[in-house]
Length: 286
Image 1 (cartoon, rainbow, N blue to C red):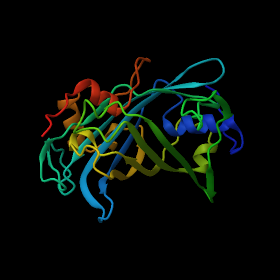
Image 2 (cartoon, helix red, strand yellow; image 1 turned 90 degrees about the horizontal axis):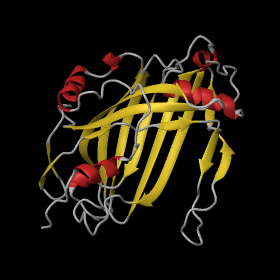
Image 3 (tube, one colour; image 1 turned 135 degrees about the horizontal axis):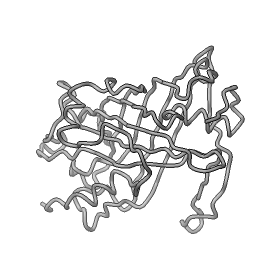
Image 4 (cartoon, rainbow, N blue to C red; image 1 turned 180 degrees about the horizontal axis):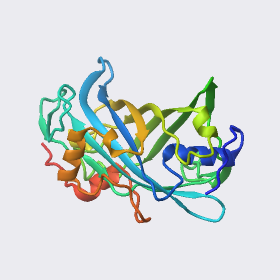
């Protein structure tokens, strides 16, 4: 597969190809692994930030040609396993430090979560007068890259506000409200030499993943003011050994099949909250 290697931050085709090589491998016979580990913090008005739990995340990703226009289909499986922040071991029960209630932990296993990488972004912004989606806009895919010597930093920030799949009239204790506000802020640090190397169909990175999200539904915090803040580091490899052995063993036991990327496109691709709404039942109201 041909791809642009001469660095050109203003070219949407170069942006597409660079983003794809960072996400995974343009060689469809190969898969890429992103491994992330970090801490979830609780943020409440008038209180100090509180450590809630740790987490272990990995993504198994494969790229496939999507169309003759050069767009690329990103096929992906992903998990989030919640942990004791001291031992690093996965947990099935958690004591809520705000309420002292012991709750069941619901881990995340999204299979699949796919999307298309194109030289264009198709945006459907809200009409602020009506609150409804406005006419979609097609804009070039241009990321805010920064370069310092051989190190190139890619920042991808996404701020969402959408109807909550867990509506409060049904999910009284799980739902933060009628709307869900979620932000994801990622920083990828890559080598300029790697991006310019025509032999590399995949470019590895180190980076950070920070996320602002409502209280996790299994925490049973309802519409209590506040939110969760994920703080983590991430790195990419083509070797599954990048994932710690105890995380791989837990995945194989509880969620078999998640340690390999999809080999074909299937769906639907839905959010973690939508998976929760499909797979769980509302907790009894106290």
